[in-house]
Length: 379
Ligand SMILES: Cc1ncc(COP(=O)(O)O)c(C=O)c1O
Image (cartoon, rainbow, N blue to C red; front, side, top):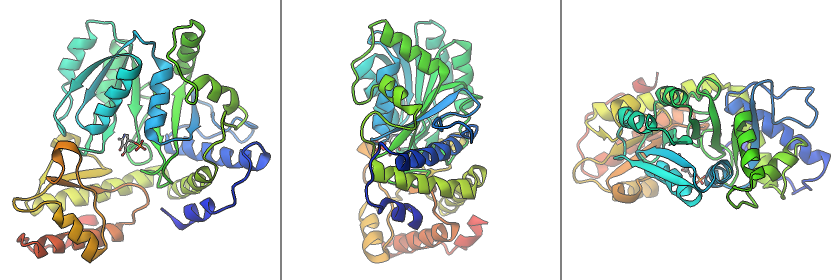
């Protein structure tokens, strides 16, 4: 997290109902529109910084990415609506679980790291009866990015909505909401936008907004109060939130999004790709096995299997002796794999230094590795 984000958060907490907070919300919303790849907030839009001249609005959610995903699902579906959720990792499985709380879900529970079976998806969609396909666009648990282009085409062909968990793709990987006709997508602050945790946002199009309104008016909606979209829409047009927002977190996130704007979305996406490419090639050349199928490997997180004889004690040693933090794996892959993030504001020299320390720590653990010029992988 950058210094300006931390400094912004250390401001005394102000009221959320005054012009000072409205100005923060306007900065935050316009930064979010950059991250989502949307048209800019219009300078003459008054208090409507959530919109631009396209079909989308952004809505800030005080809660982590999971809350924002729940907000989308709870408001968009009726209890009897059917949705299709293909998964290849923990966070997709979570999307399916949230759907299970609010509607009828067909969960295509695939192996972690394998690409989706589009033919199977099509065979199900072609039978009709589905309201939407929901995907975890970038599956952080297994390091795979879904082929959203192809999935969007399927959704268009069978006239179903497409909804994205973009928590580790928005701001780090190409996300084309308009081109893919995505109805709703989520971004989490603490991932590709390098903001604080506990705050998230959704981007929603008019079709989504209209459908949620119809469902509410028909009296068939799921119960929602804190995450009620209608309440958020009423206040959003005034650069406000229905309940007290995460005030200091929004100050920090607005600052982090300023950094994204300064770097440029395309430049940030290119830096993430360069770092991920370097990590993939470096570890592959040294004989490590990557979990994700080659055609879907993510540019914001790389999942690498431990070689024979190495387990999570390597991560502990790396942390204790090299002051370097690497995330482990989840669920059934715990202790078998580690993951290297290449998102947010990580500078390339820091990634190079981190990789050098990781390799040295593997050698310390008795794993023989050839000498390589790490830096050359990141040019
Ligand atoms: C792709 C993805 N979806 C959802 C989540 C959950 O987000 P949060 O912990 O912010 O609720 C994460 C967190 O790592 C994630 O990477």
